[in-house]
Image (cartoon, rainbow, N blue to C red; front, side):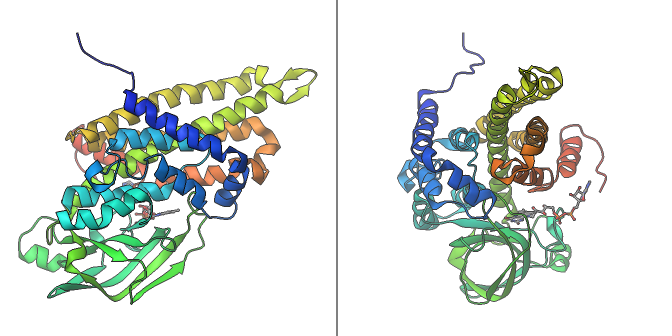
Length: 397
Ligand SMILES: Cc1cc2nc3c(=O)[nH]c(=O)nc-3n(C[C@H](O)[C@H](O)[C@H](O)COP(=O)(O)OP(=O)(O)OC[C@H]3O[C@@H](n4cnc5c(N)ncnc54)[C@H](O)[C@@H]3O)c2cc1C
């Protein structure tokens, strides 16, 4: 009788083993890598290359386009493994969005042009949807793309764009129809959006660094588009109907963030347990013997197991193109953000004052994981969506 099976496949075990083997070779330089990420806001190229070698960057990409075809669950497992060593990577998550947009909305020529380079790690892709006046409410965006024959001209601005300085291309969401045109044509609110792979060094595109804490070694930028020319061949998906492709790309982002946060929760839990075993402040008893120290750590362990299962299920559903994958992606991201905040908080408390010494990276991780309660979609909005679409309650906004 077949039924629920919590075993990983041989191929999935191999992904984890490969990631683990590569991480062992990086071990002697791990402290330096952590310092680069959390203190210098730079992501080490050596770790990026290891991710490509582990097949992580090409996991979503079929073998015929140079990927490993492992699927989202395979990618989530590999990313969790890197995060368990303190080395998650926001940029591979953003790259997976470009890959997914191409896979679900790209032409054969577009797939052949970009997917092999994304899989190899030689084409880095950022993602730009947020605008100063359109964060949670994407439909308020003002950046627009006007078609003129075989080119579009993009004008407007985007905010908080991670890694715009290291990206080769930026997947930009822009309006191709104004709100007035949508209304006049009686189209749904989601119509009139376009997805464009814009050269990160295109003429007319200005990048201004923001003074943010950053994300896993990457910095954030304001982007200003002044009639930036983008060939029609770089629009992903059908004209005026980019939203459907966009939604396909947003689900892997949430699931991979959840996987990275599960891995990070393990990273800080391991650190906290090791410290609690060693640190003695009253006689010869280590602080780890006190229940006041044990219980928060044990609670993190419970939440971690539950979140891991939910995340794997979300990835498994996504790989099967199940319609409920989006809801599971939302639930996994919500739960993982709460888990990671609780895990870092418990690890900080266990470390006492040492937790605030920067080379422990705990206090830096606090800001890093806290971001995911707010971005890419805030947890309140996730609850709104689950309440409306899963529970059938009325919309409040
Ligand atoms: C470090 C960092 C990296 C980022 N990287 C990127 C990137 O690479 N690309 C990109 O496009 N964007 C990026 N962002 C932007 C991020 O996705 C947005 O900041 C986020 O979506 C929230 O939008 P907002 O800041 O406009 O918040 P707002 O929309 O102004 O919302 C503010 C708060 O109001 C509440 N709220 C809003 N609407 C509702 C509602 N309907 N119901 C209940 N509560 C609500 C929520 O608590 C929310 O946090 C990044 C942000 C940061 C800080």
